[in-house]
Length: 401
Image (cartoon, rainbow, N blue to C red; front, side):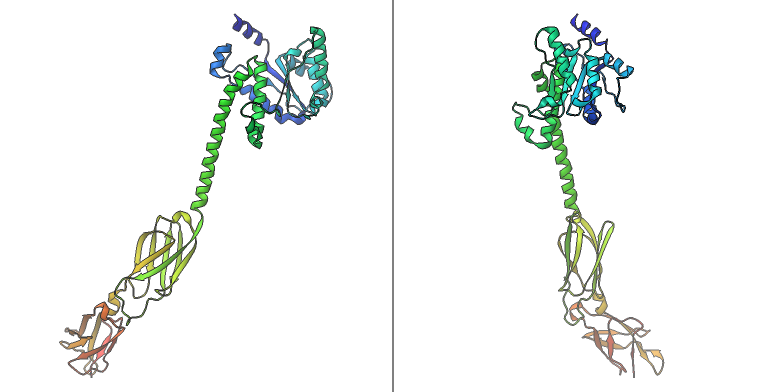
């Protein structure tokens, strides 16, 4: 019976509340409207108080640019169709003639008990400076009519809580946010005739969940930013070469090895001028460290390197001398007088013997540790020139006398 009666009473009004404010305070008034329009009562309290999950309907807020003068017929009608009047109190609204007119119209038929104050700014030493004079006049009429002192209830978004969460209010951003939330819960409890402490207890759980979500979100974002900064942090990479083949002092030393690092879509190239020297690749993205990268090394007289390595800040690449450069001897014995190749002739080079074929070609291999840049050629016939320089090939010629 009670629920049906309340529902019928609610149906008299189109709007849950009429928000009266000074245009300078529009952002605060609009924020309050959104909170009222979207409020949902905790499920457990719906049954206890026999109220709907969403017990508030749309709140009316006039966003037009109001000019000085009397209230329009439309505004008067909307005031009459609103269950409650909420006055956004500030030193600015205290001087607003339109706020005065809206209060006077709403309370003209004794509806002072359906009027509430939402204080957004006030002087702690003189809070009444934020109250429109029409508020005091309404309280006076109400008190005279009831024969006892009556005061219009209000909430202050600057008021600090005195419960166990008080220390949180000292945090600049969260503290201000919690003050607003607490004032909003006070207003809701009075508008819906609910017990504030009970409502606030549920709200604090929800707010704690929001704070935790914020903190987790911030941690995730900060972690992502730190990780991004970490992997993109520039590092310097040193690269050196180590000869792992037999070292032969008679052969030319390593010189001008071109090292190429292939890092995804970026390629770094530098030159190592000797085996005792390193190169420095500057400002390499940290994300490449510990990852496989492709390395290519090209150096005269040495075997090419083309491999994948795990990148570190200091890399050493094993390089081997190409044994074919100074080891593969290949030339022709030629008689210039007869203009004819000399076949079946025995030659000796560095202690190794070979026999020329029918084309006069001689092929011989010298092991790496015995190799030289050039060799003396001995033969069973007199030679015009007896030195062969490496590298050599089939077009190189040793002439006979």
